[in-house]
Length: 425
Image (cartoon, rainbow, N blue to C red):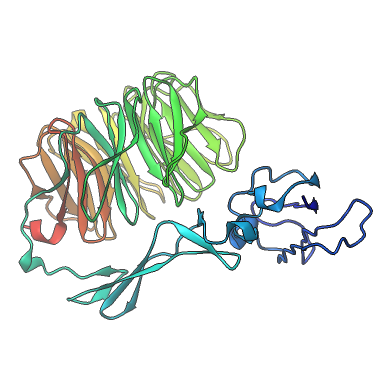
């Protein structure tokens, strides 16, 4: 066993004004033991995640005593015993390596020479690469749903990362995923009592268990399910701003949040009325109240809840861009928006048959139709709403990934996708 004195003082942003931090193997009187030393040099604006220390257990404590370095997860890839083992850092984003090659990265890294290294995966793009994706030949595409998963009882909310599609099977009490490359769907979590909202970050999948009154997460690589909040009251919609996980308790009429760095669950807003969809930007949290027929927001730093829109009958889904808030008013058969700079609520897409969830890309807004059994879109600049695909049964969740559109069919039990360009009228 090696005597260790390891002192890490760090916060999310920085440790101190010192230019270095050192974790040095020494004995209790400070004399050099002649054993291996581990030295960690850090600039003031670095944190441990930047250096591969992704698995820190207790980041606010000093460790002093006889511990075997090989048994410690604290040093992550800096621990020589972890050489060649998987690590949970953040993979680089996809890029166009050249005009014809898309470079992505394996979702799980490997400890190599003290760093978490992600293997590059290069794909030849026959029609060229742009905007970090292979170009699609729309003339070769058909506007036919590519069903990635079938027989999913009550397929509802959906989320994407670089390699997988995740969804909640509300009536099947399961959280599921399937590779974008195709294959057999995998069970991420079962025996969930009506799973609801889903969000992803680089390492975890988060979801709500509506009737279990819990918010949970699990590493994408597997392992135990972690309960981050229990004794909630019907947690439904979910959002992640990088610092907090936010959700709405539809039975408890509250908006809650949990700090991802760890800590207690906080009541962010109370006295709401069946909060449903929820979204965040840099400064505010926005949500819709289904029974109060309102779209509201509150500053992350605190203050009062601002009512931005009233009379929104059956407000359900919500999404944001830099300039507007978009939401669905299902019972009003409309998609509406409000300019963040202030102004009147706009009927962005009226006379729409029971719109549900909403998503957007740089130029268009997309929404699912539960009764209309399909997906529509409209340019943000105006014009006529376009019906993209029909013959779906109870379309619900929707997510976009470059040229591809993914959605769930609650009634039909499918998770599907299509190339958007193939369905443009």
